[in-house]
Length: 206
Length: 383
Image (cartoon, rainbow over all chains, first blue to last red; front, side):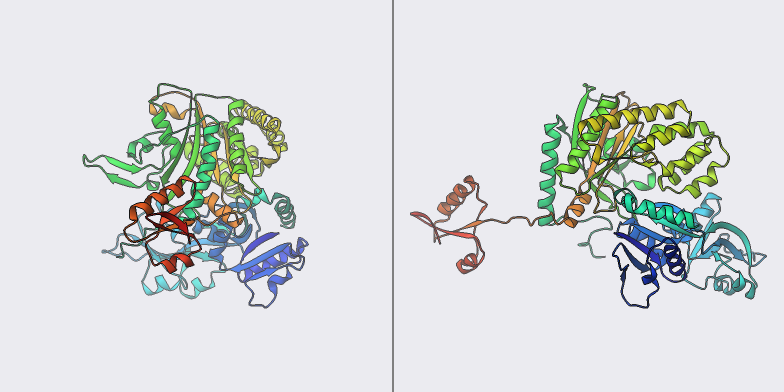
């Protein structure tokens, strides 16, 4: 039996479609239920629907053999696991965004960066040798520069409409991100006979 | 601040866990001593420079640091292989087999599945090189997995020489090489692609993450490169593999050339022990022939360490842990007969019983499920 952790929401729906195309009776993922663990009828697969940031955790600890989650989440978590496939869907960009002109400040020489990707932002600016102050937020990141909480934001941008509506622009596109198939390092070896054909089937679909 | 609580990442071992830990330590001790290994214990405190002034240094943020009274920087031993190698460099005999049960400490707060205090049991075979010695060491690792009773135990073997050879030919800088190593270790082909660009070894590097499975992996790898160092590594790996097959261990072996560990002191075969019930390795090791040079000596070496906590977790998931047995008999003294009771208790212990003096009410002893002896001037009787 293979256990998969899937990020809740649109990502889970796309993942379900992909699994169906690979011949796995995964429609149970779309069922309207309060069950936490969903199994296919033949008992060959088990699914957990969890918050995106928790997918790498379930896979790293080996509770799930496989997981599907965005590259942004993987980069932020830095979990010790195998990244097997770029599934291509849920593609977007991790960007630095803000007002076209940065307002100078006498009392704050550091660039203030609002983000929910604290670790990626730290690494990014450290690699550039730039001192920054991270302001960790959990949602509506765009509000930070609008209200003066930060100078810029570092966040995923899909259409950019929220940015435009608030007078913000993308200053730099830093990373391309999309959904990835990840595997637990031990499961890949101990369940190779089940997992490898599935990965091959998924590779052919993308 | 509640000082009776523990800092993050460390744990107490309560009686039942400790009992099982001692059981697995006894099994490993028998195995190691039976194979001619002698136990050592290295100091817990070490100089910071021991681990940072060497080529394959431990990252400074991974070490627990303290300042000595003279101002020198000390660390809690962060790695056993380095520690044993440092100690062995001053031994007169250059061919020796050492074993240990020791903690190592890792200062990083969030280590995922890893704790900050890690108990390891391991062996190092010093002064011997060659495929036969490598195969013997890997065979001992497999025997550990079997002796500990780990289900679906697999030993994944690789050779860092294959990766190192390809990387040397690729013309990448040492920083780029380290980045590629990280990507390859995560089987992240997309990440590796970004760095590798159009370098000569592109095809081989991008194939690395897929080079795992059975012995056919070695055939595939041979077709990917004409780098002599890499081909030599593959020839060596095949020799080790064939020896292990002849030892009768074929079914425990898988091959992974994409396992390129972060501890860069490894110079030859590397291997990892995996159990089907726990999503992390339970054993890890390899050959490190150049490491003794860092400590002013020169000998080839190969070894591995078993993560004892992970073994306990695996055994618990298999349902193979037991409760720590308490005393099976107790001895109650009649008034003024404490000395007789004590002597009687000792005689029970001599017969191999777990016996204790009882300090409560007699009814409580009767309810305890133990055999209860009452001892007076005339001797003891079973109640």
